[in-house]
Image (cartoon, rainbow, N blue to C red; front, side, top):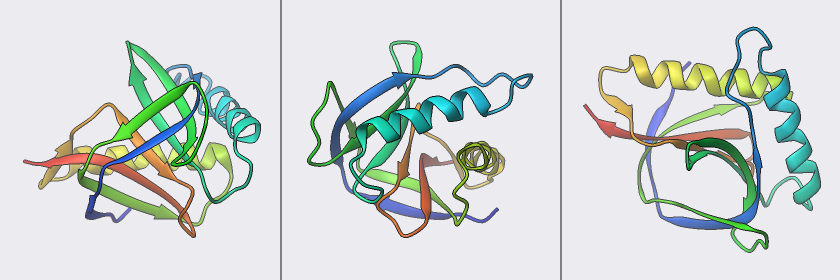
Length: 138
């Protein structure tokens, strides 16, 4: 699974958050994927102006569906910096969550960068599913 390192500018998104369970290998990605799909369906008015943010906040894991011009109960700022960018044409939610898990595996095995945050950005504004994971040089 190849990735490239890109620089992102700071962006602030507003939307809604849904608590998601920690990954349980016994149950797979199903429970988490169902919550993410339901959150996106409830909040997003279309498929291209929104992002999904997987974030650890106050010790809990959340999925935030948001947009730059959004309304909602949660605001999250993605800081400027270096990110590992992964792209896939996959559209099935459980497969996408598996792709995200694989992306983290790739970054953790990199000899050049390390994971630098407790969130990631699923950019649904791109033509294909794009995930950004914050990184720092080793």
